[in-house]
Every structure is written in structure tokens, then in C-alpha cells.
Image (cartoon, rainbow, N blue to C red; front, side):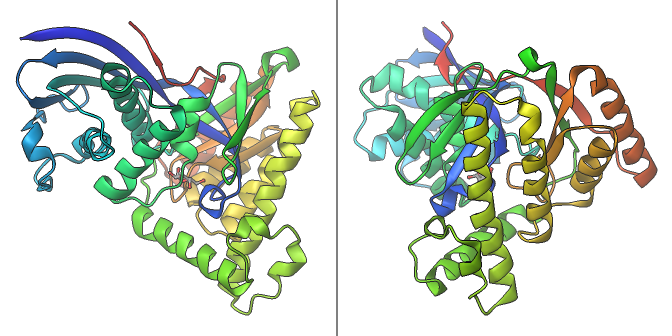
Length: 370
Ligand code: GLA
């Protein structure tokens, strides 16, 4: 038995543009999804951590706080590594954590490139903050959640997903400069312009995602070194990229340099109150670059993008890390049905499973519910 302490929520995200730019010290432009992870906490008398997940009812974890630091998590279900990593990281930074039961419930589809893992880490992190370390600022929560994924789960992600989950606000895109950590909320008024943003979760698995993601990071670092800059963010002239001798590094750098410029252009247009239809071609150019230069797309993603554009979408692109996952499409409200039907049709013809489709509007970032 324990004392009910409250309930917290952290969202998943779609990234409108700015893919594989975060670990190059660049720019990103995500929005929070109405889908996320809810964490209900109960304070326990005993020094134990109890984790329960609605999505894995047979896979609960019970661990004493003393055992937390001794490692040996390999026998535990993977989902539990995220909350345990966050708790461990809180302790490592000198914040005392006491006995706790956390009941987790998620609505972000897993493996869809919509940041179900950052939603999980951030939901647990703000729970711990409010219960044990109220002074901890959002920047440290983002760092704790990212460290949990990097160190305790072993995926070398950047800060895009955790920043989106923590900092996004309803009705806005989050324009974040990863280098300076400065950010700005830019209104994204789809309804006013008769538009919808559709998400197609293609259901295609993140093939080789860990190894390939790490490989892209390494290639970007190698390109930056050869160009004699700290990060590819420091290159703004695409002609510079052509100095790279290796054609693979040249393609990778071309994507990052071009993508940072695309984020700045989209942010500038929306900030100035432009019709969001204007950004459509920039979104599509981002997809072409991810497909041809960064080589992180997949047949399902390309099929969704091509068929959505054919059916009249103003712009479409994969969102997230790639190698599978989801596509976003910017469409007129009245053509949403036709776009969805055309994409489903194209999937059927290719022999792919039907994609899960939903409309999204920018939702609030992580917060306490009760
Ligand atoms: C994943 C990572 C992010 C980011 C994107 C690509 O979502 O978690 O840090 O690198 O891929 O933009």
C-alpha cells in the first residue's frame, strides 16, 4: 500500500522539418502530438521501484533502489529501461528518489517514429521532478531523458524528441536552435487556412535503425572534421560541401546543410504569417533529400509521400529518424479523404499493410494532470 501522488502526461511528436539536424547542432521544428504517455505515481514506504505498463501487463518490474545502481538490467523488458534509466540518472545527479510505483499508459504507436520513447522518458522525468526535485529546470529534464536513452537503452539519439515533448505548446511549432538551446513558439494555424496535417503510420519496422542511425551520426562527424568545422551546422554554403572527397560524406553533408536551411525558411514563412501551403514544396524537398542524400527512407515511406502528392497534398515527407515509421502530409481539409484513399490504394497495390492514418493539431507539452 502507498499514497497516490498524482498523474502526469508527456506527448509524442511529429517533426515538421529538421531531420537528422539535432546531433549536428542545427535547427528543428517539431510539434507535440495529442498522443502520449501518462504516468500515475504512488509513493511507497519501502525503498523499491515498481513499474507497471498497460501495454505490457505481464511484464511488470520490481526492484529495490539499492539494486538500481548495480546494472544487470538485461533480463528486464526493454520498455522498463527507459523509466529505470531516468530514475538512475536523477540519482546520479544527486536528487534523492524514494520508493515509488509508476503505472504507465501510452497512446503513441510504438516504432512509428512518433517518439513513444521520449514520451515515456519525459513522463517519468517530470513525475520525479515534481515529487522529489521541484527546482529542476526543463533543460535538465531534457538532458536526463536523453541520457536515459543514450546510456541506459543504448540508442545514440539527439535532443529533438525530448525537447519537443517538454517544450512544445498547444497551437504552435517549436523552433529550436540546438546549439544555443534558444527556442521560439511559432503559431501553426492549420484550421484558419482550411488545412489539415495528416500522419500515415506506415507500420513498417525501423529496419536496422540503431546501427544505421549511429552510422549516420558518425558520417556527419567525419564530414564536419574534413570540412574543418565543429558540427555541420557551421556550414551554410552548399558549395562548401562539394569539397568533400568521399561521395557518401558529400551526400550526407548536403542533406544536413540543406535541411538546416529548409528549417530556417519554413520558420521564417510561418513567423511572417504566410499561408502554410507555401511551405509544402519545402517539406517535400526535405523528403527527397532524406531519401536520396541521407538514405534513411523506406519503400513504404516513399509510396506514402508519392501517392499523397499525386492526390493533391501540398507537401509530404517522412518524419522522425526514418528506415520505416511515419509520413506527414499537408492537405486541404476537403481533399483529406481523397488523399487517404489514394495512399491506402497505393499501399494495397504494393502489397503493404494498410497504414494507420490520423489528423494532428499541435498539442501541449509535458504537464501534470492531477
Ligand atoms: C530520432 C532521434 C532524434 C533525431 C531524429 C531525426 O527521432 O531520436 O534525436 O535525430 O531521429 O531527426
